[in-house]
Image (cartoon, rainbow, N blue to C red; front, top):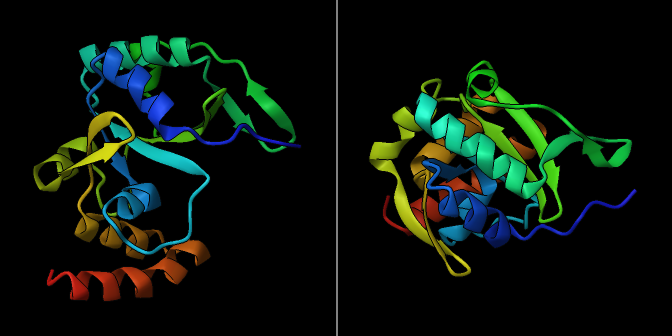
Amino acid sequence: MSRPELSAENILVVLNRHEVEYLVIGAFAAIAQGAPLDATHDVDLTPRRSVENLGRLSEALTDLAARIRVDDLDEGLAFSHDAASLARSDMLNLTCPAGDFDLVFAPAAAPGGYEDLVSHSVAIRVGSEDVRAASLADVLRSKEEAGRDKDLRALAILRRFLREQGE
């Protein structure tokens, strides 16, 4: 099995073209802010949950040819979506020709998702795209809350990096 190599920029270009409001979260957000974490193989995003935004997100997912990510199936599973079905989702693990990405509507430590994180978010640049990302402090809190092995391994690195940054 071989997944497409991640081109986060190509995914973000499509989201931005559709004017989707979202934040980059997780390890990708931390790495983009200079944290010395191991490279990640996907990008995690939390979209604003307004009906209008979810409609734009659905259009972007269509343009991306996004499919549900399944371990045994490189190309993933096709799925139907619209603003209403996306509003009922908590998390979607997706793949597309530009790589793997997750839509996380209620990240750990931020159950309100986008609305909980946007006021602390920071501007980052991914290739040619200007986007907003969760703050390092919010990424750290989310990893603490999630408590998965990979998150726990990243915590010491993130804590040290934040201390070095004076945060």
